[in-house]
Image (cartoon, rainbow, N blue to C red; front, side):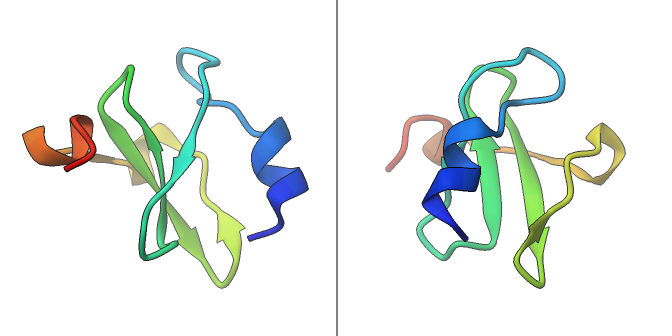
Length: 61
């Protein structure tokens, strides 16, 4: 994913920062505890497509 795009993207719910997961398949919002999928290099920023982060992911372990 283009770093410039990551700089301008924000969580659609809280408008907070997003973090690219280690495997680069999701964008994480730790404030809301949600992971938005990245499909074919395109972030899917819909709450209905997001999954809940588990406890370790929220703490970045």
